Image (cartoon, one colour):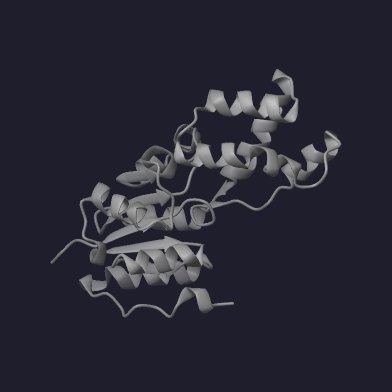
Length: 215
């Protein structure tokens, strides 16, 4: 029997990452119109998510585009990372720790340059799963099919043997289109039930309804 594999997203699944309002706070502090920060930084945020800029580049562009001095840049980036990293989903993480030896575990995350170092330090995801595939390291973001292919390849697993868990419906549908099983994260109880079903004697339940139609 082929060994089952579970691949999970980070933000919104393994981490709770609510909007902290940090961008609006900085716009008020700098007396900038609402939306200015993202408008000025959009291409840098995108480049950071695909790994085409370094953290040093990001800091330099924040300083230039927002007119911040070095201490302000450090404070700005600290606020960015506080929201990005959020807090750990302890219940789900504890459940996954208990799956060691029962299945293979991996992560596929749309990320930002510097995420691996910080999430490893804070949450030790590298000890929770076998492989972590970050968008900023492979230069591809979900829902691009190549991201899911990369995750399966990193795990050495067939798509049909993998269950992918994400809190974004379009990513769930994209995973299904590549042949993976997929589950839309809404809460821990339903997610744990779905993972358990995936592992049950190697028999996988039918595909779930189209996640994009859920409220």
